[in-house]
Length: 457
Image 1 (spheres, rainbow, N blue to C red):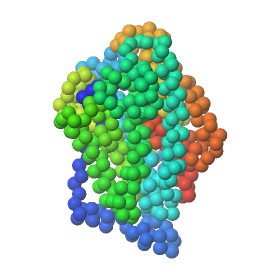
Image 2 (image 1 turned 45 degrees about the vertical axis):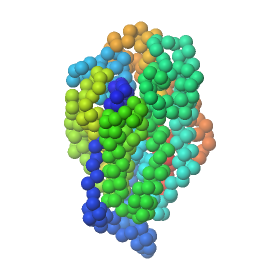
Image 3 (image 1 turned 180 degrees about the horizontal axis):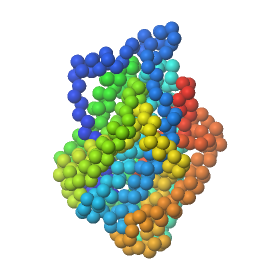
Image 4 (image 1 turned 90 degrees about the vertical axis):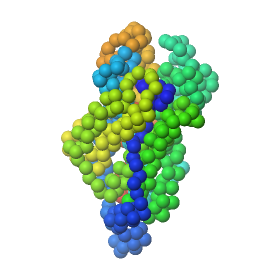
């Protein structure tokens, strides 16, 4: 996959939000949107908030299905790369831009993980997120399967050596196990592991997990004063989203950042912040229809597949190209996610809620973990194709045929202990939760909150 940074890595940076707020605008928004203060709401004899958020439980299957689609997009773009499909043509650009599956997962994470904080800000009777439980649920969902995969891939690559592998070392193993492999100069030369190259986005995801509680505190307690002020909160999230383009400008405009900085969290904050914005809009009761957003998503995807966002060659780009790619990737992700979380119950939601997509979405994290190594084995040992030859579709289907059962088994083995524990934070049948991943990444469990709404834990 190609990168938007100066080194060639998949970069799904952020969207180009601009913060155009003044005290007067914020005050006006708050006056219109906030309604009574929290104290006024809680002193109401009925004890009810001004407006209850929409129920999300009916849409959890659709969110899980969207994770399956995003995972398939990532597998497809990797298959296109391995078979030489990323040519300097419009179709080659389309294949390369299928990496948009990653910002889709980032947006899902922002929405689902920020919702508990938003719900508590809207109604103080809602359970306040607990840092210990939040951390435990993230660790339980991410680390077991990840550690097993990393150890297995390093073991396989001691005997399977299809090409150069600078990451296959004891220091490389330590860096991958701690998800710190991207925090170095010249990542492609010093630490890239061909069986784990996609894990850069999991490192980004985990760094978002780490900072989310602090971001929630700054936004809801410091900025909004512990009150439900959605206008001010949206303005703060807009400023957070703008960090992505600003980081890209700093990355391309000087040499003071390592050349792997395009893979770090600041470069990808826009999809996360956009998902967090959708959590606020969901709480406000805003509704959108897929008939409105899907054509815009298709248009944004076609636009990002043109030279405006750069080509597929591993060459230096003008600053405008990675910025355009960042903006349009985030736009595609949010336009696909918005109707699923903002009340649309039409055909788009029904298709994504279909049993095959939901089932595939539930193992999308594991597919993400194993598919690159499986693809390399399929390419060199099963299909016996030289690199950059063969059929993209054939390689993709072969990879999925091997990866899906392996992913199902990996999930059963690594999540069995969490299921048997029977805690409130991990259910017996995990559904949709934060996406993690460069491709499926975090589907922690659902649980019922006091209001009866299912949330990702």
